[in-house]
Length: 385
Image (cartoon, rainbow, N blue to C red):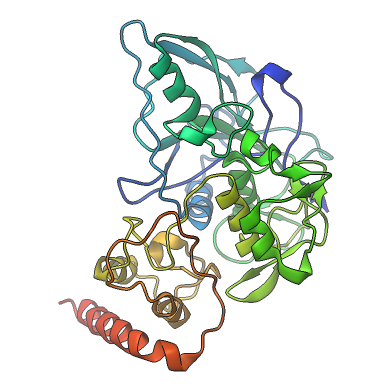
């Protein structure tokens, strides 16, 4: 077994180190992961398959609707930030970079962390020198998330970070099951991206830790009888043995600290619920394009992805709305069960529907309508129409 997650320590004034970083986006009003490989001088991600794997890991994690304000320096409003390079762990201080709306800039790379070292480390970027008016300073620190400021934070607004993979470890990339004796790049990257979203590293997370347990209400509701106290390992991972659910079935939570070689894990409902407790607003089941409504456009996106009923491993933007990594009729059933299809914008403050096996009698009318529309469109596309 090898560990992932938080490693190292920042000076207290600078915040905390996480063990990775964040998202990819589709709709304009949703977070976007921007992977910048310019600091991967060792070429860990020179192989296209590894880059595609990292993108897929982001798509497995990212299903949020938050609007992150742009960071645009001008005049007396200037800034720099503390960044740990992913290739050699040396600090540098980029100055006056523009971060577009909703973008979180991630610098992935590989570095030797020793044979016995962690599988990966994510370093959250920290504002360093910040000059200008109060509104500008608040934008840099919170990305426009009102609850992200101060010691009583209930939200989180990151802007950048670096992601380091241990080059001393044997890795499997791509969607196939990891080979024996290798570590699954998709699983580890998804785990670390959740750290960068604030799990274990944000003030909003720390404010929900009481006597070694996580007390976020959404996570507690998702935990159920299997995890009555949501104990933590240290302050940044679920305790060993913690389980969540994926499409209603029990699964090892991805935010447990250790991974075995050859093991693949996906984010569970428990892991996702914890992110909601940290202030992230999840899209409703079926809102594939993350525009705040479940409409035929979402079914068009599923059809256009070409992932439906093809097996493999796929993310939210391709139509995997129940989190099992597949795009299948089960996802259409999950969409129908919410009752949100073609009903207009849904309330962003409401929690997303819990994925359980629905009573078919109550779902059949919506399912028939949705499936008929989808299958007709899918058949038309398959014929080139």
